[in-house]
Image (tube, rainbow, N blue to C red):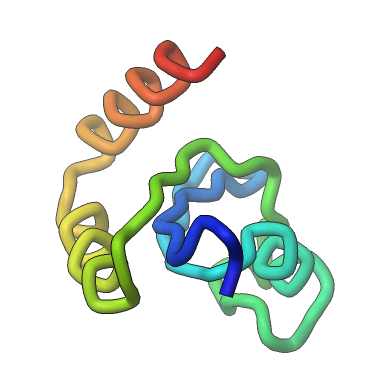
Length: 90
């Protein structure tokens, strides 16, 4: 596990669609999404472009709950969350 614990993240693909997932290593997971058979099928037709959002979760259970919450959001709400995160990140 990473020193941060579990991460909940969103990645934007080349077409602008957002993918939400969890991981203990963002670097490894992004590498898997871009080049591995272990990456999500979401990225088969439009490659990952950039990580647009990440937050630390207390444990795997908390990360899974937060991932489910984010996946239920409307696209506009996800984009607002991404914008607020970007504004708060130096």
